[in-house]
Length: 157
Image (cartoon, rainbow, N blue to C red):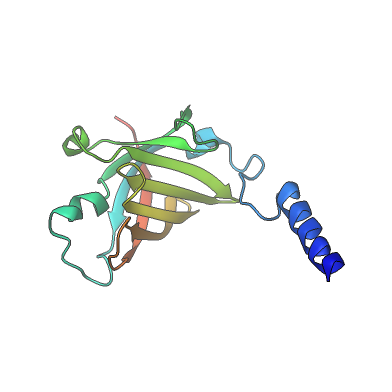
């Protein structure tokens, strides 16, 4: 019995130390500079529909985003800064605005105040930008919602 448990621990350790058990950035696809830029953001309605009242601000994605490649999110290896071009977001409590590459042709975004409640999503590369699903998350019991999002690359001006 002890050998069996010891074998499981060794296999688990090997998988973890080799990177099998954790996501990581993938090679050089594509380089971060090719992802960086300005994007128009479109999102379908949240499903299921829930009246969030004042909390709806936390799950509102801005209409225009800038994905920086050279600005690293503080203390979070692999994450880059995501900025809004919407003037309404200047005094926003949303402080966690970031993205990272998670695989070939795939990125993950987080838009949240302190990372406790907000929006996260995984988006796949398209010819014109990115497309995928975004989901709400909360630090208390509340119905989670999902929607489809499209980020279309546009000229930064």
